[in-house]
Structure formats: C-alpha cells, structure tokens
Length: 338
Image (cartoon, rainbow, N blue to C red; front, side, top):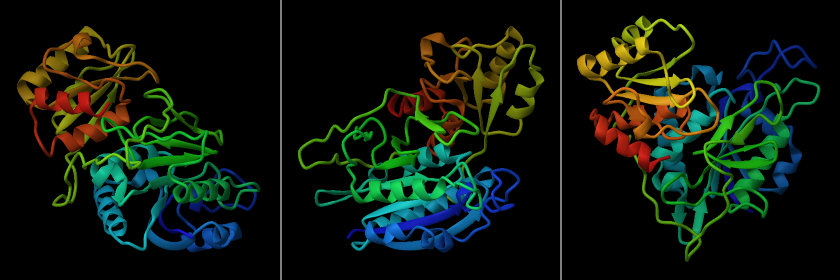
C-alpha cells in the first residue's frame, strides 16, 4: 500500500459542539488522530501517518501559516516513503490555501519521482465531527483514495497543464477539483465546491505520464507575504474606502460590478491610488463567472484579473509583490496563471 501523510490544520472537519447539532460548534477542537481512528476503512486504503500541523478555524489562517505549511509539504514530498499528502482544512479559505500551494510548491505540488506524481489534496467538511451525520469521514476517505490512485479514476477531474495548476486539488463531496478553478459556491450545502473559473478539466498527460513543472514563486526565504486588501464595490459605495485601504496595503484587489466596473467616484479614487500611492490595483469581479481583460479596464495602470475571483486574485498579487511592484510585470503573472 502507498504511504499517505495527513496534515491536519483544523476546520469544521475537526469541529465539536453539542452532540447532533450542525451549528454552534468550535472549529479545530478535535485532534486529527481521533478523526482517523473513527474511519477504520482507511487502514485498508493506505498506510496513514498523521501530523497535527495546527488546529485553527480557517478564517484565522495567515500568510505565515501558508508559508510554513508549504515548506513542511516540500520536506515531506522529498521523502521516498511518502507517496502523497492530504490536508485537513476549513472550507472558508480552502480555495485560497489550495491556490497558494499550487503556486509555491515544486511542480505545482506534484513532486515527480520517476514517472510517479505525488499529489497534494485538501479536504474538509461542512458539518462538525459531532453532527448526527458528519460529512467529514466520507470526504477524508475520498481524499485518501484519490491520493492513492492519482491520476484519479475515470470520471474525476485532473488538470495536468503547464499553464495552470497540476498536483494540488480539493477533494469534496465525491469530486476532485483542481486548485486553480475550485471555488466554494454554497455556505451550507454538503456539495459546497465547484470548478468555476474555467471549464471542468480532464487528464492531459504527455509521454511519461507527467509534465516537468517548476514552482511559480520561491518562498523559501519568506516568513510572510505583503498585505493586500480586497474591496467590494456596491451601489453608492464610499470611495474614501479605497483611499483608506491604499494607505494600509501593499496592493488592492477590486471586486467590481459586472465586468469589473465601478462608479466614477471610485474610478477617480483608484486613479489617485495608481498615480500617487504607487501600489498595484487588480480589477476582478464580484460575479462568479466571467473574466476581466486589460482592454476592459476603466482606469489606466490597473491590472486585469482575467477569470480569477477576488480572493484568488489577492493570493496571486501577494505572491507577485515579492517579485515586482510594476503593474505591467504583474499583469503578465495574471496572464500566465489564469
């Protein structure tokens, strides 16, 4: 059997509350080993090693935690006795962590030894472990099975494409989704994730069964990332929010209306930010589907997020800022990783 390391970071899957209730629980209250012991079938799927990396609500995740997690994963992937990694994670920021890992791990998280790719798969749950019918055990079992059988069985999605992510996935509700396009689409349903940023993907393997990929961003000497603020435009929104955030951020991401649009008042404020504050401004959309291209930008000097949603656009901007602050150079990152 293959050897799978489970890195636990907390979240609802490790949540505990009043027995039988789905709400009012505390995330990250149960140790990972307790969760594993409750799924006897795992012993028949893989040799499991459990590591409690942290135990938090995913809303409390920081760039320091992201970087430390990526470094730990890199260490594990280099070991000959590790065939894959499953990460237990809260669902609120799971897509951001997955996207971050896909851009910072060697081979986009798919460490290749010979012809064997080592997957990194995130999973979690919508119900706490103490619920009457928790969904965590099924998701965890599916994630481990997917890690063991990577590439996954026919019918599941696997992206192997040098221009996007390969090797980092979210496994949830019986679906294996790539880190690049996965989004949380429902606040309550058990089937809470879908691939929205681009069409569902299928396996495209070259000779040898893998692509020789390199990491997009080197964080080996980093402890934290530059802080970026995401601002949501709504009708009659105060443009002073833009100026306030610009004074406290290394960059801004705007969740615009429609195709990344906003009021003339906001356009004036953003123009000031670009010309006076000299910080990059990325334009995304608050709409789930669609893309923003440079030709659509209302304010000169801003950056198009293409089809990255605001939260992921912020992840990419934070990483781009460790390389450059030039808008034209940052725009190339969005062209490459969308």
